[in-house]
Image (tube, rainbow, N blue to C red; front, top):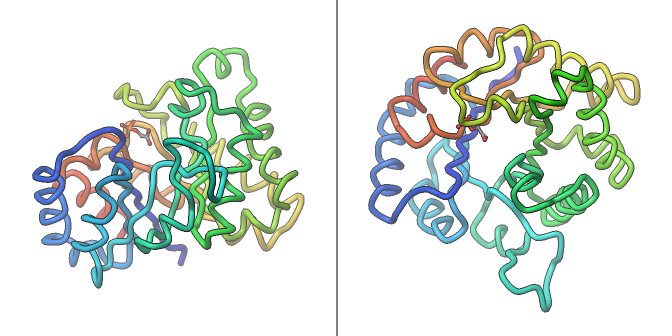
Length: 250
Ligand code: PGA
């Protein structure tokens, strides 16, 4: 039985108070989530707080981004070893907001993926097409290109120890979820592409779906053969909603 992973991406949200409350709400209901793996990714400055509150619980934590550099004159950056100091398990790389709003391209994303691995973190590599690309029929080509940048730099085996999040850009924060079948089709494409290179990697890699996942649609998505969980934005800011999604994977 494959294990479902539900990761919350809090983006640029929260305060000390609201995060304390969110964590209390999540930990209070976590025993009803079966063997679903759970993680939350707060803004960098709240990682120490989250690490302290979640230590010893079944909920892991990670970062929303990571520097491609390990140390030096890189103002504003946060390195993998620093995240390691606070026991982060995951680091999201290549989120579509980083790609589109901060001009982070495939090669830069691949270097961040490498930096996460070097620090012993599990990268959550986000891939996905825009609405225009979907309408042009190039979804698979876009996702393949995004994966190839990582495969060319780190080798396909590296993906066996990573998480991939398929997040169609048109479904992020829009309330427009990809249908379970639309998501499954792309997930199957990703797994098939990896299987063509290394069957073991294709079997092992967790492929999450992200884009307007909520309690009401999570079970249907997670029931698909190649959907191994979700990367959750908006709904991860509400403890009850987030727990409902986690329970849908149980
Ligand atoms: P959403 O965001 O769940 O708010 O659509 C998902 C994401 O961007 O990771």
